[in-house]
Image 1 (cartoon, one colour):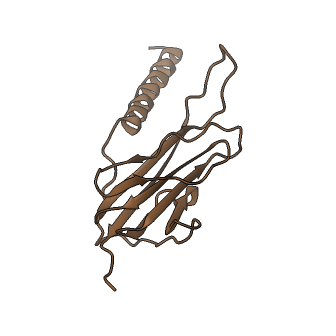
Image 2 (tube, helix red, strand yellow; image 1 turned 90 degrees about the horizontal axis):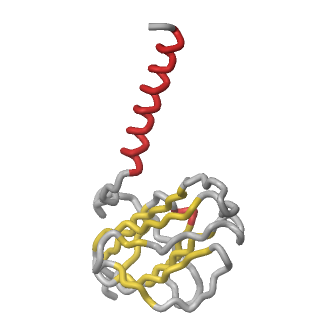
Image 3 (cartoon, helix red, strand yellow; image 1 turned 90 degrees about the vertical axis):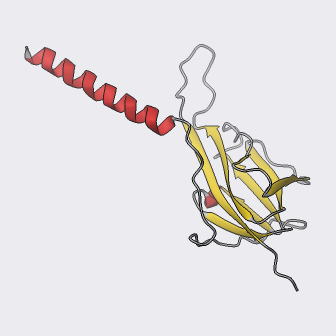
Length: 160
């Protein structure tokens, strides 16, 4: 085997391994699970009148706690108004958070959803957006995707 052939074989082997790793990281897998007893979570407050808590880009990968009956506002913003917007926020499990009316308007490139905590439990909220701006017609696109997720732990409201 010549040096050139050996180098080509090494490059092809590395590409095959990288492709397998990329496929493994992009494959559909269940959302991360969290247990209310093992996760330390923050209790974000604010969001304006009618909202008990608010989270956004900065809570990516974090856990937050709310009580049943509280409203959680989730707002995700792109780096600029012309950036590709976030897609709809996905809830990993039904019955814990319920979509509530949204009384806000967002700037271009932002996505928001208002949730009401209806039952104790744990869910993962997730969203994605194209990381690259739109390409001119016929030009290649980068295909990169920015992902966001936060674990929401809903605890039973304390009785007064």
